[in-house]
Image (cartoon, rainbow, N blue to C red):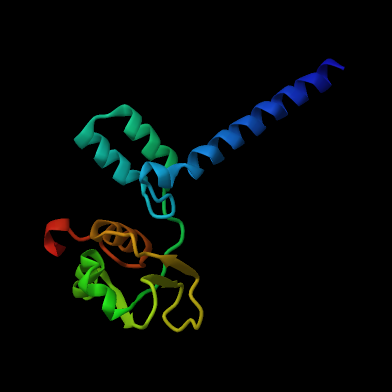
Length: 157
């Protein structure tokens, strides 16, 4: 009976840890982090600048340690009417070649399509990017596109 109680105790601890981690990741957007694009390197850089442990801990709980999947093609679809009041998206479209990005103009909300291979008909990943800024685009594309060398931020902006 003691062994069974031990297994139940360990199972309960594991369930609590998984639930706590899921709760933290669910709160990432309210903390200002996008866990689908935030790399842990960004958290480390931010920590060097801010030196605030709570902010660093929150960032690390929301980040991606290492990008496993690389894509061959990134396509941004955006409505030209948005560009006049969405300055961040407009700046990205102006620097599309430096970012390795293809832009298509359609009557849609800003959406980024990531393709595993250039000839693929369907994207492997679709991301709503209306709230992204230039730095988010740069970080995401430099870490997710095959053969893309991250440029210095000052070179692009």
